[in-house]
Image (cartoon, rainbow, N blue to C red; front, side):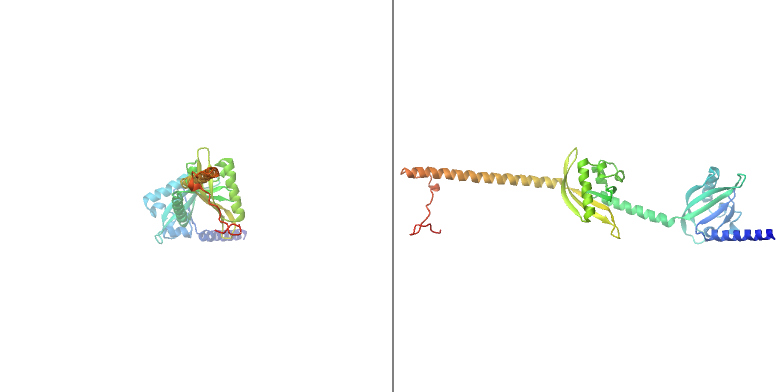
Length: 323
């Protein structure tokens, strides 16, 4: 009776295991050392478009092209020889409906107690949708990089610690790096002179504290040159309003600023010259009037008629009349 109970429990355990394996959406199979199938689950049956009963005892050459079968066989043998799991990506075509899928496949050798190879256990996880999403993301990232890299100004994104999360190529080149990825993770202190870097970080803190945009024109002085930039910074928030960091761009306005400064200098020179000229003319007029006064005092005709002072008219009461 005890043996009967044990046998029943074993059958129940086997049935439970079979139900579990068939419920798993991944492909699961077991092959012997010669590549013949010993077991497979329901999802694997869909791959080859037939029942497990028809699959058992056969190898991959029965179901797929010789090239594909050789590829599968090579991966099986590599796992067996390594004595450890081997991972690979395999494109397959489902015989049940003809659709193609990319499988992330892990093959593991199975040994008995004396170390003899029983076979190779395979698990294939469908990553077709995941890979498509990755490709879409990669393509979109490529588009965004192409867009940002062709902007005629510096663009950057920082986290709340003012570490660079992303920059465009012009920024990387201005910072002395070959590639934009070389800047990721660094701070202004790693790139710019200390005083300049601290000023940039202070601006970041101000923008994050106020959650307000900031736009300034500032002169950037490095060891090699002095450049003017129009700089814009803004806080970056997530959908819930939590602060993620800052975004900014800086446009080189050195040519325009140089012209503006030259115009301001010329205007100042013109104003100074004008004021100096007016002062000189006034002094000359005063001298002419003094000479005329001396000549009149001695009964002589004024030498400078244009500088003769016109007496202020007075009324009959002796007060100055309104002119």
